[in-house]
Image (cartoon, rainbow, N blue to C red; front, side):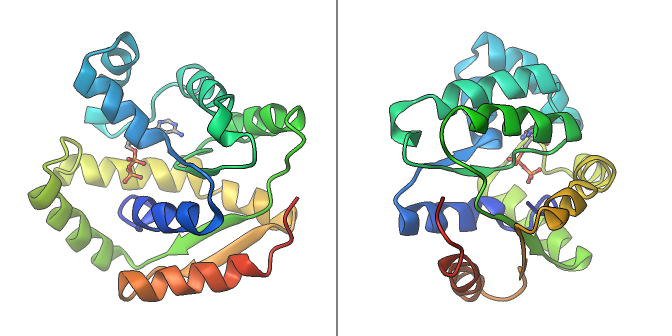
Length: 186
Ligand code: ADP
């Protein structure tokens, strides 16, 4: 978890490689569907372009189907999910029947100014449609309203790991590994 631009996607790939599990990014799956013009992509696009969350029913079903794929049978990393209270509950339900449990929730903490400059840089490099200033601001608001409160849920469960997301990418990666390496596997 972490606000837009915190580096979730970047770190997710390294963590997934390290633990030999797939990184499942809801944002990436949505973007792939948008670029292929699938019905899911058409449905998701207007929310993404506005910086709003895609409705829970759509997102939940998509994640459910993805974690049913054979490559996720030994575990998986979710990047960008859950982001709402309803998604937290849905994920609990999905995991219950897999024999897995949620081992850890990593939150990347960053400062706001740094994030804005990262996102503007990404806008230049990747040309993401939702990296314009207005939409970025809305995504930050939605994160603060809907997702930040979920951190408390995972803290209460004792599985929250807060990692300083500032500094060089490889420094952050090392912090994430150090924190995760001591977590017992389920
Ligand atoms: P970021 O975290 O940088 O905003 P993502 O690539 O993770 O970017 O997500 C991009 C967009 O995809 C979000 O703004 C939202 O519209 C949609 N999205 C991704 N994950 C979810 C989710 N779990 N629930 C609802 N919408 C989502």
